Image 1 (tube, helix red, strand yellow):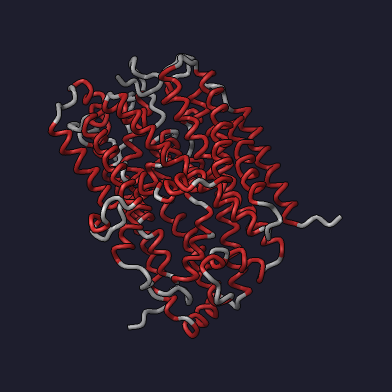
Image 2 (cartoon, each protein chain N blue to C red):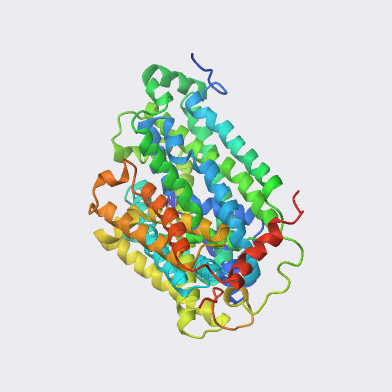
Length: 495
Length: 68
């Protein structure tokens, strides 16, 4: 029997994940701290890979390479330019202060951190509702994108339904037994595997096309426009897109929770230093492959161009490379889906169920596992039926996350911020964003920007104005948060 | 003015991001040196009664928000 190499690699990949899940499960205790936060003990490599791998999606090597195919090298700056600095900076700006509070008061999610700062159940609940509202549809979109990619790169040998079930199923294999530790360990493996394989693919494709300099020479002769900054988008579009992408990441619950799970400040500092380099490397490789693809396989339409990396691999490299490429794509899809599933289950268990039912730490872990199964089932079903309303929310989920950032920054830096200001700044811009997206507000009211930009500044304005117009928080409440920051930041323990 | 290709194949529209990424890392190092202190010793050693939920492992219920 002649079994194709991609199926052998796929089986090995699944067995490896099951093995990691099984092993890590033996290290995981049945406490909510250990299951949902890996005992707040994530080390340098783990937190770096966890943040990095969760932030790399199928878009990185499918959508982005397709964009570079059409747009040229300018695609890099358009998609990732701002994120290279702003995203790791937000890990410092928001992440570190949140981590201090989490470590001191036991907070484990955004609803807990910001509900705790403002001493308000309303704030906590608003955070929970909004985060679920944006995360669930976005998770469905990730599953759909992954399933479409899977069945496309396998030449439709696997149906969409089976591909989606496979992505959700293997995520559950290690997430249910091992919780956050399981997702992080698999992220470490997948992140390293991803970095190594994409760089190898870049060199292999480059050699097959005659060498890096020869490809560039062809580009200069055949399509020099691709060598320049693209003129296919306006400055205002570029600003809006970069604004939204770079600010959203720290608000993703899966990223925020992982920061809270960091062992110490040194570990977090190392992650922020290496993050820009890793992001530039991965998107750089994807950009190069996309641009080179426009020379190697010219004339593709937008949909076909999205799959330029698999096309380059299958046309120019041996089948083993195609199989490795498939596993890489699967691993990046899954590393986002598993962390999203776990963070949603975690928040519903800790921030919703625990409020209404008295549950022990061990029971919380059990409920977390039950919710993992429930939410993966719901996400799978929605991915299949693709209801228009939910998919529309997924399309602007990044914007929804971004407009929550002003509230997070204000709550962490301004003692005068109160629960009224925070609730107003969370709810009103979210409603406005919805109205802009569905077209109920005239487009001129965004001043030519994507709706995320005015909604963001509206949130910043509201949290300040409404807080100033309403009673200031009690001194004891402010001291609980800002006393902790004072002790840390007024100290002399700088390097 | 035509700018040279970095390493013989990367045009300026792309290659300046290599330096930009290095600069971003350097700025993060600067921030760490100047504005990112480690928590003082003992800051987390005496959790008060508000330390509930995710932060506890004693089997009690409730969440860390402890909000009113």
